[in-house]
Structure formats: structure tokens, C-alpha cells
Amino acid sequence: MYITDLNGFLIEVTDLDEAIRITANYKEHRHKNKRFSEFDKRQKAYWTDMYEKLTALKQTSNNN
Image 1: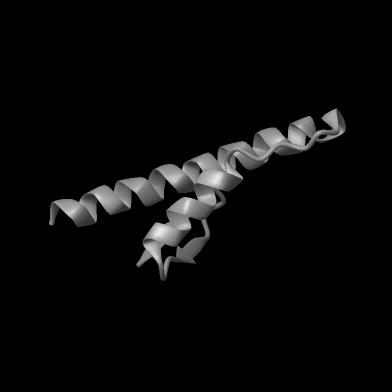
Image 2 (image 1 turned 180 degrees about the horizontal axis):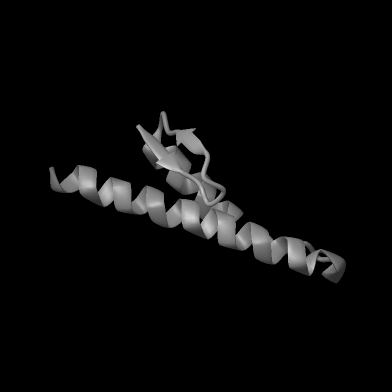
């Protein structure tokens, strides 16, 4: 199965549960160094978007 990321790229998902687990961790990652705060904001937006798309895909697949 495939999802489209925040940048418009098509991403193949081969293990949905593992992808959800990984993105859940990534969306909460922050650098201790505050100089990375803008980068961290962009990364949080990206990984949160991916996580939401993956969990929606899982819900859809569970309902079928």
C-alpha cells in the first residue's frame, strides 16, 4: 500500500503496524539544543501528518 507524504512523494508501506509505531516515536522527537527548534517544528509536522495518514489507513483496513 502507498501513502503520499507532506511533500507530495509516494511512500510504500510494507508493514503498517511497524510504520505506525515508528512515526509515533518520530513525531515526538525534539533536539535538546534550541537552535534546532525550527527544524523540529517542520519534522513534527511531517511525522504527525504521516502518523495520521497511517492510522487512518489502519482504521479503514480494520473496517473492511
